[in-house]
Length: 193
Image (cartoon, rainbow, N blue to C red):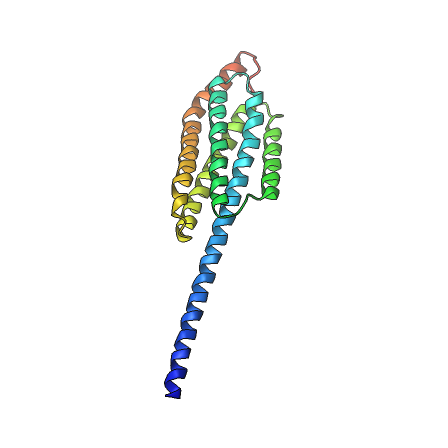
């Protein structure tokens, strides 16, 4: 009898250990998800710090200015959705990450201002950054699923869709932007922005 009681206790202890391990694994995935949300938040702030200076400088490319203005508004909405997801978890964004990536974005935007083909360099960089964001959101959707965060799917898919739309537009418009740049240069006009 004593042996049976001891055996039962051992099973309970093993179940408790298994549950503790499962809880630990879930907490690690949740932490990964929160980190991903914070990284996405900082990434979107970086995007704003890249696009806003570009928009302020554009003079000869009204279609680019219009699309940048639209995507800035979309990006602000994306940040709001990420804030809501973080708040729903009792978390907040990382101010340090936001500031660091925003500074990096500002520096990148300023770096192109000295180039004679600023509009082209901005177009290349924007296309690359949009594809970086697309990859980040695709990864974050997988992590959210692993964490069981089903309510995140809608907001994250909306952010992803907006990034995909901007990337498609940048790719489709690059030939026209390049032609317009070359036309302005060929007649001696300021073409860089």
